[in-house]
Length: 552
Ligand code: HAS
Ligand code: CU
Image (tube, rainbow, N blue to C red; front, side, top):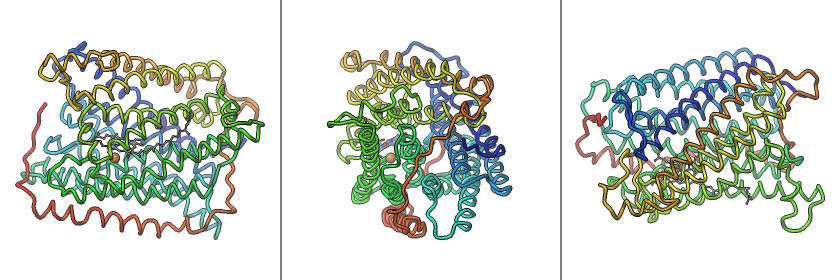
């Protein structure tokens, strides 16, 4: 069994530990939220709904994901390209400490009640300046991390001239390129707009510009979460089911398309906002539909892998392969359910992105339902499915039968909880229940209250779903603890847990796919095309800037 070096394992484990601390606090905040919206819980005066909502969003969507992603990338890069050299390791640790300093600063500000601005931190809501400094440190830390991993890759490339890199490394680099380009927007707005404004160095802020720079980052952010999950689907799943990667070039091309199309689309979050002409909104809507293609390619590729592997195992007929899948293996089943959730998740995204339909769903609970079956299940559940083997792999402990059973319970409860919660959120949203608000009763209007009383269109159903999710999260925390500290150590080679990484045929893969400068160049051209004129207009025709508001 191939083990990665001890130093790299320590790095990865440390990241996982921080990820799950954030997960623990974040899910607890989620539990409180569904009860507040259901009027079943009144908070003590020092706690506030928006404060908890901010903590929930930041800790789960930003912190849990980012740390877990780096743990996964570090492990996979070390596995596929070899142990990190001293420089790469040093920079990874520096990245970790800077990111963590940012995380702690931002979390303290949220807990102290000075930053109840939600994870999107829309101006003119104004947090304390230190909150934005925390965010900036967080991003810079992830950049240091990213450059460390890129350095590891560059060194490998130098030693293996004219060779294509292994698929895992290729996908890691694509994800990091996407992340670095995406962060330029958030760094620009935080450094040049929010920090001077929040510290009082300037009086006002250009609201529309800040939101646009945020969404320039905010949309590719969702692919920064998704791509590592896709990496697991492309590389880990085929190995577990006993097959090979369906098509190496298809997989690489889909990641390239994400670099190209995931950034110039941020306006699909701002379709209802004034100050952007409908031409530019329409253009970015079209580009949004382009970024759906690599996901459809991924779906195709997954079905291809399942069917080809199934047929090799003797399956026949249209759906025979379905019964050849290793359902009893939690490493597979968790990822399969994650994929399954992404079918309605992706369909909902297409609805959101459709210019006119967006009018119906924007700022309603529908959108909350959407992101719980995109980042909250396909991505989060993939990370859970990876956790089950990744921690034992890193700690050299066994994935015991009892832990596997618990893992099944955890995945099933998460699925049920999410199904209830997100279905009711979608329906409530269609009925007009607003989001980003503690107040869900529509002025206690009797007709609205009547609507919100169906079995699935009910805040109680949402709360039941939320409670099941919290229980599931606690089971997961228990599993994490067990596999980190208590499960028996693997004594023989056979007992060691493997890092499942499927074989990928490189013979057909065109070399130009790895010519990053072409893709980075086209990405910047598309970004310039989609953003230059509307951003320039926002600056030139800006209404008077806004002073800050603390509404909590
Ligand atoms: Fe989204 C809002 C459009 C994907 C996350 N999105 C959000 C927000 C979040 C989020 C967090 O256009 C809220 C932000 C906020 O706070 O305001 N989204 C899309 C589109 C896609 C999409 C077009 N979103 C995601 C992903 C996310 C995510 C992924 C997180 C990870 N989203 C929007 C829009 C809004 C939005 C608007 C703004 C709404 C508003 O008005 O505010 C696409 O990328 C989706 C493409 C996906 C597919 C699905 C492919 C299916 C696969 C699974 C195959 C299954 C298998 C199993 C093989 C086309 C790959 C088969 C098994 C069987 C048994 C059949
Ligand atoms: Cu988006």
